Image (spheres, rainbow, N blue to C red):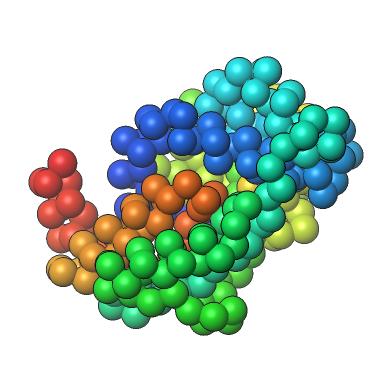
Length: 251
């Protein structure tokens, strides 16, 4: 099992962005709508919808917003037609990016994302440009005080989880792609309530960036996350200790 979660070296700067609640709600609403459209409005039989609803609850989204998003997805209410797309690109220092986007205009989204890559010393690529460096996994997150390492090891790993790690505030339970909901159900049955469960892209061989390239890659990462159509950003770089210290000093 891992100790400190290395991905938190990037994610630790995300709090200020998530505080922009209106933008975050818009992204969650898109995710709920897509999930309801593709798998129906009953969360008990639609794992993707259940995961989207978890995200809504974790961010205190009003129930009225959730209900409308589900009804737009199932066609009970008229709404915008969204499609889910995956974009891939290369960033500074050879860093690789995979983006999950939900949009009502794929041409506009592609053009805007291409500009962001260009601006931040990268390049939007074609399908296959970056996905080869990632493996899809399940990721379950929960507050650090909800369970002990021993409890999580017994329940989550016993149900098929592959890895357990943490940072100062959260546990991260990694599962095989197809076992995400099985592990989640086992945790819930044991009284351990996950905060979020999602499918993520995990880099198979993370690369460490330092100096100017680290700063540029981080700026690209944050710019992509800020884009209205981007639901998730996955990158294969980690920040060196020196780069982390430099970023913290700038805050």
